[in-house]
Image (cartoon, rainbow over all chains, first blue to last red; front, side):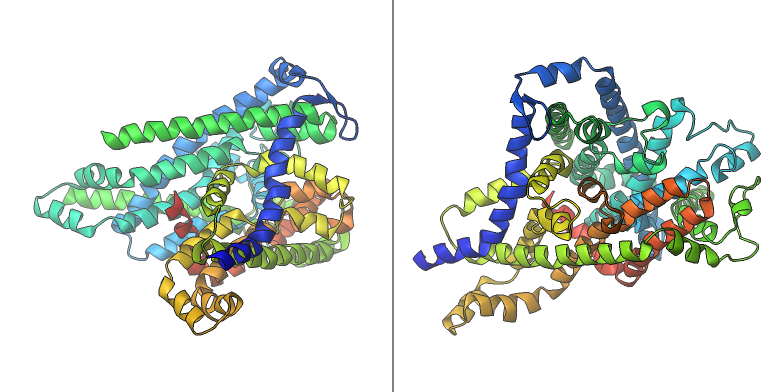
Length: 288
Length: 274
């Protein structure tokens, strides 16, 4: 037991050193910096001024609004589509792994590269999407260059990207459901609808809770896909700005790290709160 | 019976539409990278290029140092993968097989750190790296990622499934912990380690925000940063942008198609912690 002590810390040493330096310290530092003003090399105490600043900054509110809207729309829609597709694959398809492999592709490929392709497909003039929409006699908006459309475009891309992880995890969960449930249900002549709502969905609740958490956290951190869609901008006239865009801008471009860190702390608290709230909700649903 | 059939057909229709939507951007990217400029911006859009313009790739390599980007990306992704795997392996071994005071606290701290979004600490990490004078260096690019709580946690669940009696037997036979790790633990969890390695390499390959922060010299850029810079510089030359995007995506897609089973299994296993 005694000898184990020293050894254990030795084995853990690299992890503990790196984690302290690059995970724990930066959290504390971010928190501290949110109460400081000035440039990175000359920081002075400023109390709650940074927080006052961001809460009276319309850009921050726009970033927050966009981020929230993105999360609130893309996460449930993406998850609903994923559940539908996973269920179809699980219930009807013989070559499940073929579809799994297909749907999972976006998860491993670079968001930046695919974002560039989407920018091109979404192009208002020569894009494939508008070509299709015009042929179907539907409105063909300017997805990229119209500020009013920025968020919609971001959401569509977000949903497209989110299916991969969701479907694969859901397929794993579906396979874990005891097949006897379905056999018994069939014996009693249950319809497909009944089987889905009475057996599948209740069994999926923990997985859906997990996916909701992961998706919401991911949605609040959205940055790269916006960057790729709008070629480094946050949409025309910053119309598609997000929380991380705001933080990056304040930190790197404007050079006010204190303000950026105040926004980071707020974003972090929102993520924590959303996760907490959502866990509570899922628990309630699970109990019923 | 008839209703059932219509339902099935409808389901298949939905499935194929979404599968098409998923795959289409990849196909379009590859085809678009082989078109000439007129074809990429024609109305109605061209789908199959009249003549495959392989020369686009030569132009991409001539216009931007993509060879260098490849080298940088492979190097940093490999170093991050190997070192973080090594560190996680040692850490996970200690957490599973050794008994020591403070283990519970370490576990709690690690688990709560898993909740912290990377974006919340990336900017202060930039600060640290800048202070160390490591901007625009390989060390700066990899340093914060040389350990991964996530992978350590993942390996813990793997090692936990290996019976403890094996460890005890090895100790009785006079093996050291080091022997046990390399001669028993590693060979027994090869598939787990391999999957973690693959996932780590892929995420290293696709990293974007961190290298964007800590590099501003063209020679130090990683693929994705080089790609965005190229997309702005090449401006209107859509076919070259698509060719460059193809260059970034195809190596990982090949890796993915070869190891798809391990990768998907590995990702699904992740969720067990949920």
